[in-house]
Amino acid sequence: MRKYTKYIIPIMAGIIACTGCASSDREIEKTTEVTTEATTKETVTTQEITSEVTSETTTETTTEATTKETEETTPEETTTEDTTKELEFEETTKKPKLKFREVDEVVYVTRHTYVYVDYSTQSQKKGELGVSNSLKRIGICNGWSMVEFEGDTGYVLTECLSLDKPVEKTMEYYDEQFAGDCFIGDSRTQGLFNTSQIITADFLCSVGQNISDVRSDEKTLNHLKTKKYRNVYIEFGINEMGWSDLDKFERCYEEFVNIVKQYQPNAKIYVQGVIPVTKTKSDSNQTYAPHRVSAFDERIKSVAKKTGAIYLDIAIGICGESRVLPEDVAPDGVHMGKYYNDKWLDYIIENRED
Image (cartoon, rainbow, N blue to C red; front, side, top):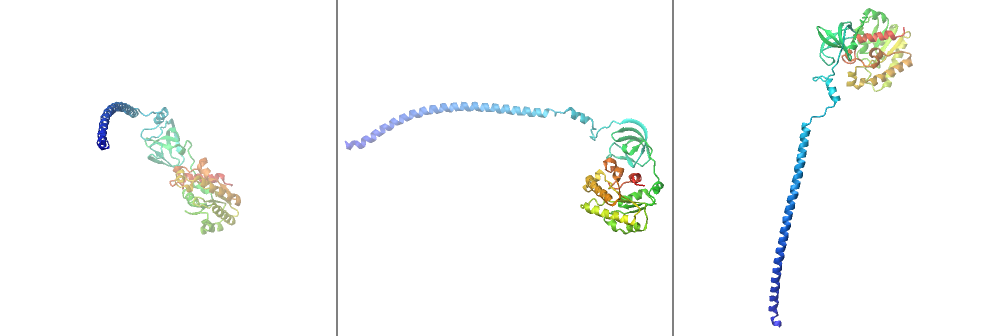
């Protein structure tokens, strides 16, 4: 039996293998059918999903396109307030339209100014006006006067006009008022002399002079030593605006007032507050800012209190409550013309202790 075993075993193995092959073939066919069915279902499912996605994408795209088209075609909303505001401005200049109240009257120029093509100081100038010039005014609105000028219409700042004819003070008037007096100061005091031409008073002043240097100025000291004055008017501060040490300013000012008192024991001594500059000047250079002018003024008041000198608030006399120099009275924002220099002199006359 063992002799035939080697033949029997291979034969049995072959039979089993054949049986396995047949079974495997049937399983393969069954698996193939299942796989095919699954594949078919997956294909259908994929097509359905793709269809849904495509449909959703198309819907979103259409919605976005519609929204964008609506945004592009729908005009911006304009409120009634914006529309009303726009109507108040000219299309070209965007400048407020003014409705002038009609008048028919003669007015007089109270200070040097200009006639403008339009109601703006930035517009072209049609002509120049001097003190006491007369004009026919035909309209008033918002700080502007509409006037007849050289056969046409022009515009002048109302603050420069008056219904009352100004009394022009002569040189003789100021000569009489300031006879025997002395003015000491910087370029502003020099300008005061240039426009008034007072010949009965001494003007000890120069461009760039400051309160520190004047204490040793030979011309000034010689006049104080050799002459007897009725009133002495001191004006400093604008050239010292750049000083950071206000204590030095006050100390120098006090020393100079005491020097004047030493040489002029019978004179009344007046210390004048700092005259402000124009807004344009102070905006462009904070050295001349209003708060600095006020700070220097306080130091001058302190000097007056300690020395017995008389303080004159020139700024209120020239500028009024605004304490800002009007734009058109000082071309450089600092030095004034005749009209405002005369106001300076008038304020001294009205407020000094005679």
